Amino acid sequence: MLQSQEVKQVQPADGIWHNARIAPSGNPDQVITDAAMVLRDGLIAWIGTEAEMPDEFGQAGLARHDVGKRWITPGLIDCHTHLVYGGNRADEFALRLAGASYEEIARSGGGIVSTVRATRLADEDSLFQQSARRLEALLAEGVTTVEIKSGYGLDLATERKMLRVARRLGTSYPVTVYTTFLGAHALPPEYLGRADAYIKLVCEEMLPALHAEGLIDAVDVFCENIGFSVAQSEQVFSAAAKLGLPVKMHADQLSNMGGTQLATRFKALSVDHLEHLSEADVIAMQQSGTVAVLLPGAYYFIRETKQPPLELLRRYKIPIAISTDSNPGTSPSTSLLLMLNMACTLFRMTTAEALTGVTANAALALGKADRHGLLAAGRAADFVVWSVESLAELAYWSGLNPCSTIVRAGQFSVALQKETA
Ligand code: DI6
Ligand code: FE
Image 1 (tube, rainbow, N blue to C red):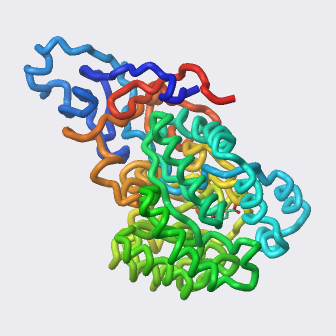
Image 2: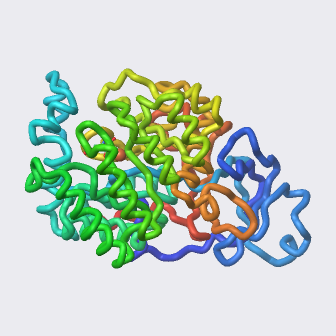
Image 3: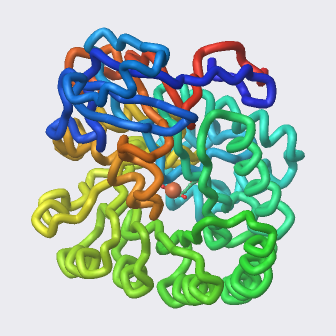
């Protein structure tokens, strides 16, 4: 397993990576065959065909890494996760298998609120340990960038604890973590019947305090009939805008409440889920440059039958990202590769669309396309070497992990020992 950097030796991957096939943006339709990539001081110094590599690199006595014609892509990006939480909801899974719906369980005091109880009870170290094993599973499949949301605390102290754990995961493991404040995820039990008062707390106390502590990279809202209304979402987005924070939204998953329309007015980085998205919503997304994040793991796990409107997204050329939505209630998954498979089998995406969805378009969904999702000179060296004949295999297999080498920030992040139990 990938080991925490707190105890891992640093192994620089500098040198000439050659005899490779490279998809610089993750898109298998845009590749360099007979490729070479030069890494120096943790950065990509040069990338192109081996024949065109400038002599200065060949003569510099650099280490040579023969890739044996295998494929290289950018490190994968999981752009929507709820990786940090206490406990799990296997008991609720049993109830759902016996016929209860996700919404019924949520309305009867289970669902998100039961994870809130477990998360409030866990101390910071326990929360770190519980979350670290999920992160390790993601990283083992080539993820080098991950977004992690809060939203199982729903009070200032526990939201802070979650975001601190997320930040600590990013300094303890070979991964870049972006944090998203999702205070408006569910109504905490102590605010029952007082949703507007809770939203006021989110906007006026939690958000400014956690932002001042440097714990927030973006702000999200669960805009849904079992979450928050469009008017309440607007208050949260206005508070985020005042602080200069970008926004995104859980929108149109179980119903169309007009969430995407609102999100586009705030130039949201992404809207996520989208099973109930309309054509007017897609047009609004095109105008605001908002990315569509599709979450096939949640679609699968809650046995949804309404498909996100892929044809409309294609017609209006909306960038599509794919993510695990890793969470205890609707997508207890820690495999981004499996999500590629599901995006193709369940949503009928092409393998090229799916792969672009966890590289270039996932970077766009985070507002970080300048830093991630592309292998180019001057960029940080975050990449994966895959033991596959074709990149379509990344979406084809389920259960096989063809990841052979991972380099993150110019260093090998190899399978050593596990730090956590
Ligand atoms: N993402 C979420 O935040 C909610 N659904 C989803 O896809 C619910 C998460 C949960 O039930 O814990
Ligand atoms: Fe989610």
